[in-house]
Structure formats: C-alpha cells, structure tokens
Image (tube, rainbow, N blue to C red; front, side, top):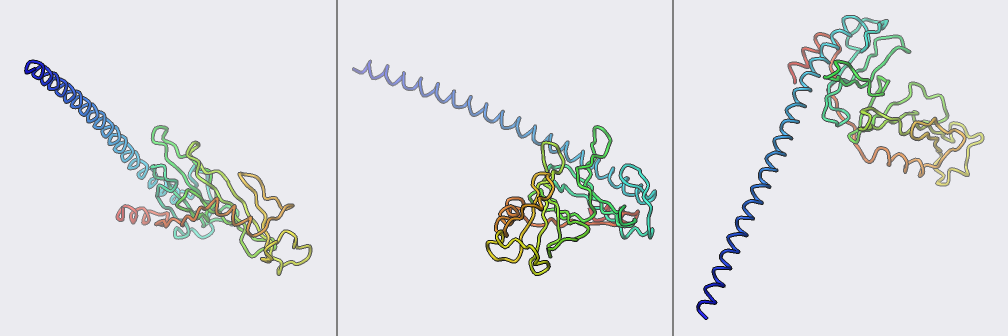
Length: 259
C-alpha cells in the first residue's frame, strides 16, 4: 500500500512539473510575441512621425513658393486682385484621420472664378503632392471624415444654401461625393409646390443626389426623408477646428513658432 501511494505521489509530482514547464514555455512565447508586436508598432509609429516631419517641411516650403510666385500647388500661375497674403490661408492637420498630415489651402486673392482651395498630401516616397479630391476654398470638415462644401450661389427657391458633402475613402486616400442637396420653400415660391410630398406640412421639400450623382430635381423628398439621409452622412459629428495661418513668410514663421 505504501509502495503504491509513493508511486502515485511521484507520478503526480512529475505531471505537475511538466505542466509548470509547459506553462512557462507558453508564457515566454506570449511575452516574446507581445514584445515583437510592440517593437513593430513602435517602429511604424517612429516611421510615421519622421514622414510627417518631412511632410511639414514640404508643406511650408510649398506655401512660401505659392505666396512668392502667386501659383497653385502645381506651379500654375494665379492672377491676384489685391496682392494681399492675408486673404490666403493654410493649415496643416491630419484632417482625414489616416495618420498622415495634410495641407489645407484656402486661396481668396483672385478673380472670383479662380479662387480655389483643397486638401493635399505629400507623398514622401514619390516626392509629389496628391490632390485628395476637394476643390473649394469654403470647406468645413467634420470629425467623422465628412467635408461640407457650400455652393457659391443659391439661385433656387430654398433658404438653405445648396451644398455637396464628401466622405474620406481610406481605400483610395481621397474624398468621394456622397451627398448633394438643395431645397424649395413654399413661402418663396408657392406655384406648383408639391404639397403631396410635404407630408409633414413643413413648408420645405428637398432635392438630393447620392454617391456622386447629380441632384434629382424631378423627385423632391419630404423633410423627414431628407433628415434621415443627412443623419446617415453626418452621423451627429462635429466640425473640426483648424488653426489657419496666412500664406506668407510671416505665416510660415508663426506656424513654426507655435508647433
């Protein structure tokens, strides 16, 4: 009986030792994997930070070039009206949330049809500036990746200023038009107003174009239908506050001193 108990005890001790060794090995493997993952992440972060530093230098050099030569991002000349640098602004921000800093430009010192703006990303490897697909000096950005672009004119029957909304597409690293909207207010133009569409009797109907399509002015929608579409696009997001600087040598100096 004693002999049997002794053998059983030894067997249990051997089994516990083997399990302990196996657990240690497993934990060591997990630690090694975790350390490797952290190293890769830190390396990627360091690389991104270095690239962003290079981007900032490229953006500031470009701003000074555009100001001095009165040209756009690609060197094409712009005829100024007032030669006033305070009318032209720039900001540097990761506005699309991809981790890479972008240059946001708003150029107002030009004949009306030549005012321009947009979002540009510097490709460090190719040494070139990429247009992210927005062409307007009147941009409002939201924290869900949407950019709001009001139209320059409102020539319709609505109080709401017509607009386009773009959403950042990570797969193409550019903005895609997702919504265009206009409105018709009955008190502005009651003739032929579509009361049958205005089911809430809101006094306003809307016209929309989705996913890059033109606005469908043949098929108005009710206020509730419009609000549903609007909320799907903007998702209760908030405008992003950007720090703008004058597009001049002084503006570049101010940026450097504050960042």
